Image 1 (cartoon, rainbow, N blue to C red):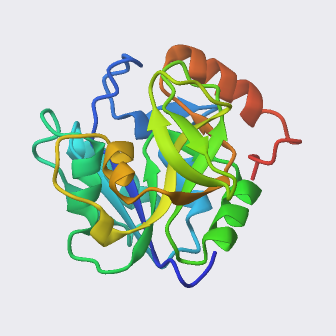
Image 2 (image 1 turned 120 degrees about the vertical axis):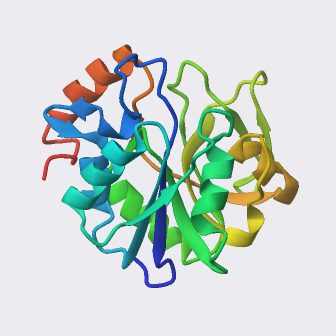
Length: 220
């Protein structure tokens, strides 16, 4: 990982209602390991990792501390009425530098994440992936491989991956989506990043199959 990005922030405050597990999605197990366990293994070279907790916050914080004792815990007490953008804002409002953002239900592929960070070099870069989500946020690219628009309805071959390197000052305390906040700064450079998104029971089944395949590169 590049020294130009010192902080990684995991947004794990939401209730994960579509999974119906009664725990934060970051604590959901895939092949015997929590999503958070996969994430923190991938982020081990970051000197500073923060996790924003809310729903079952004490449980999430304890699990995070058990995996990485020096992780910084940020609490979103209003998790039931706020969103992921506001969790990230809480997580970085004291910073003035770029950071890696990673939703709590995402498992990046190791080599792909490393290549993404190498490409970013500490500058704002938005992670995109081939469309495979049931509720995709489509991204549309210009000839320079920069994002010129996001859309829920106008289809494209790529979607917002919920992974990005952004400067902390691009965020705001607004009750809207992360991609909608980023729209204010378009065009922004994009880079492919391979990841699993665990949002539904079907996603868990798919992730279990992928993580069992040593050819895919998730196995440690």
